[in-house]
Image 1 (cartoon, helix red, strand yellow):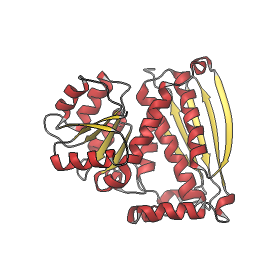
Image 2 (cartoon, rainbow, N blue to C red):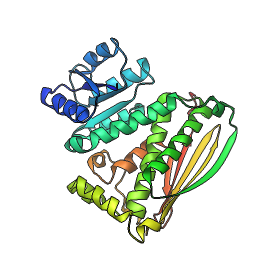
Image 3 (cartoon, rainbow, N blue to C red):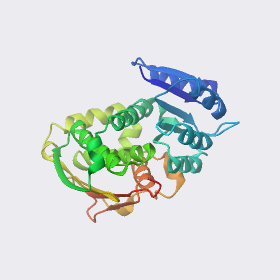
Length: 297
């Protein structure tokens, strides 16, 4: 059974977060009122993931992420961000948090985000030791716009990097998150031409339209190509779709913390925070992600 630690000083927000996580699942949730309380509960038994608010007394979300990384390096954390906490949240992502969800979209996005983080964490725990012998690997995959297939490929590449580098758990998780964001963008916004504003306005309609277009021409004929080049010091991933593309200069500034709360800036923010370099081609239908092996590894 998945065990989640929810950390928030607001009783109302704690209950809301807990209700979102347990709805339709057998997950077990333990609640903590601030960071110090969370650390005490983490010392009492194992957890699978921590979901934490940013602004709290005693110990805020940034300090909690640092403490979890120090004392429980294999335990992923997911941030819940509100207006006013953007700069702290960016610092927490850089420090080791696995992902984040804006508080105003908690009911819609939290469960899916936590599931993705848990899936990545589980796969890393079972990675093959063969990857430790890897010197260099290059591979190109091509698939129709089927997220389950593409995300499985991303997970395999993530395991390869993790085994080759023998890096910290948080580095593995962040790399996987960035790669997944690039793939989701290629499928939804590239091949299926879905508008992120629709997702913010009507979540269910967004996914209904995605399913509908996946069965229609010309969308269903389009593919995603993923090329990976991995060695002991560097990993490069190129994700290309067959959609019409977009103007990369129109993207929100990922260095501006205020954009953390924008629905169409979340993926870019995560990719640029977790990777060392993120570049788009001129047409806007191909993104290149580069991650250098951390020196501490």
